[in-house]
Image 1 (cartoon, helix red, strand yellow):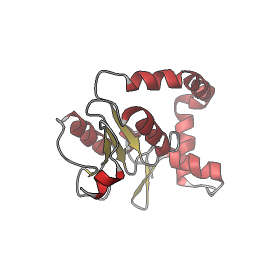
Image 2: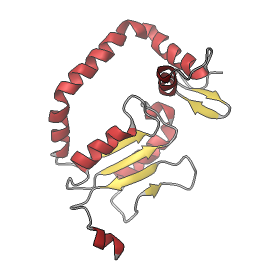
Image 3: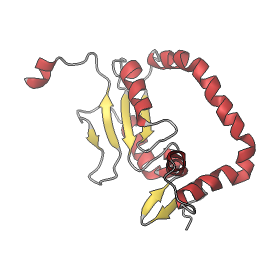
Length: 178
């Protein structure tokens, strides 16, 4: 049964399902005929004849790869804080992409830069978990505090503050003596 405003979210056994999960299962060959996740993916591509422009999405990936280093360098040099918010189940741009961007471009960037993950969210995390997305936005807009990494709330599916930028990585001795 569909829930939510569009074909991108459905509920199965009380768990939110998204097209990205269906794509991952279809790609690995683990989806069964009639799998609701694959049906959600099919409905997403069919929505407003999206299959007609699918090739443009693929072309976008090629174009993006040509400019990626320039964009990431510009992001690292931006004179304002940068916040990454990532869906933990993103199969289009998996969390390892966020980790790469964070570790190579933002972790040591001056300012209050932050990395968040949202559980049960995929590539379109603002659609998958709008409640969590808003909580992260509000948290990221608050002045810096001493809160370390961890869940923003006590719920199991609460958004996670994964890391904040710093001037340098601590030495092992600093961590062991803290």
